[in-house]
Length: 328
Length: 125
Image (cartoon, rainbow over all chains, first blue to last red):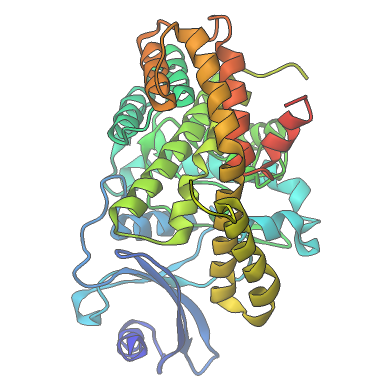
């Protein structure tokens, strides 16, 4: 059924295309879906991905940039040489597919545990931390005058937002209180430079091949802010998937990350990176609490969501390791 | 007083049945869901086994730390408020030890295979 609409759509904007086949839903919540499909073409099938909000689900959650902005950012990234899929088409009403966009499909792996353990990526792994540094530098250099409209968030605003989110859960957690105090006491204030921030740059949101990072995905939390936020988030322990001595996504060291970032002409502020790592750890913990609430209140009453609620304690131990480390 | 087998024995028997008899029969997405279901039952079994003792120890520490009495929920709320107000912090004797002990007890139920937990357990719990 979706293939009929895709077929009609691709014939309008993809020269020579005769239809669409093999459509399969890869993931989907109530408001956003990702599909893979092939564009039938006399020169050979073209692998494509559809990201869309089905009709009637136009409104994006408050923190999300929206699919139109996501498409624009990916295209800008692609043009600037940041590993990114090429955007093929932004949906229009005639497509009858809702709102969203169609992009080129890039082959590779996104499942973090496979990337960290499979032999296929063994040669790439030692280089990933440094490569990620270079990619983030490129991403933070995207021209601000070409960016879509994005929310702007500095450290101080983020602290009060997380404070509010945490209190709305009515879930007394002394370790989270301690983290909130620490963040207030260490608030670095406005950054000297405000840039595009990806907002969810981590192991799990990257397509990796034997040759390294092939694409940066999930731009929906993009905003303007402190570039060090992305460097801190990629180091949050939950995204190391067990490789806890390799802070950068379980791949490598902060030193490699910083070296890759600075080699691309950007300065690292390690104290700010640490601040954002603490912030990121708390952020994931509060998100786990949000999952618990969603599970309890009904919109997604799945076992998986229930169990994510029980992952809040992993962020508590990681916060203690950051803020009150015990002797080695 | 309720009859036996105890809830611990009952949940464990269901988890073992799903793990040993049903897992080999299914694949794909239902197999993933089944794994989540088994993980939940294992977590519940651990909580039923450990909660009473860990809550009692937590209440004991909180009483000493705060100088007041109450349920484990009340005392946690009181501690959270005092930290928020800045009346208690990491320089307060016993706070870091209390938070560590409490957090380790939670991980022992929630995620005993979490790498940070296993590392800290190696330091002596």
